[in-house]
Amino acid sequence: MTKASMLRRLKLEDTTFDTIKTAVAQAESKTTGEIALALTAESARYSVYELMAALCVGVFAFAVLLPFSGVIQGFLDKVMWGAAVWHLPAFFGISCFGITAILFWVANVPAVDRLIIPQSVRRRTVYNRALRHFVESGVYATENRSGILIFVSYMEREVRILADSGISAKIDPALWNLIAVDLAEGLGTADATGAFVRAVERCGELLAEHFPAPAATEDNPNELPDGLVILDDEEGEE
Image (cartoon, rainbow, N blue to C red):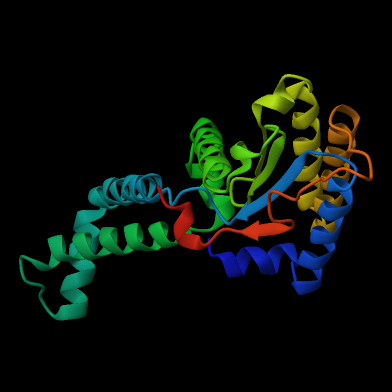
């Protein structure tokens, strides 16, 4: 799945990113915590699973066609006025290869991908991709270890909220999971922007409760970029 296709389906536009960025800034103004957001079309290519599924269908097609060899041979004889010996195996080879190629292409449709790829594999892959971005984006390196990452992988329909050690010591991870579930459900509606904003606001409320903003006379530096980061397609590769 491509980044452009994902953005089109979620109806994310320039104004959307401005709205989310504003929501993050407002939430962070009430806390010393930092909120980062990232969205990717898919957390890995999954080509091995797609190819294996296509090959299995190709083998199944061969097994179905095999008992009809006589009928197929008769058809080839009529069409070609006497088919050569190699025409029948060529027909099987071309047919099965064509079916495999078509199925491999169809397997790239997100709905089909979710049927082919085991859920346990998708969950593990999304978590690993989220953890990788957690480190690469510097969420783990805030001064008070009070950063969180809201990570969305669209094809897998998975949302992960990763919190740094300072937050995990004070806030029950189950609360982040509730927000993640609500965000995942919200992204399935026509208002993806609203779903992101609500998730940011709820995260901000939790952070403000345990990591309140300092007094007006004290600094509250913004250690991470605000707003939603769209990961490039190639970053989703394994």
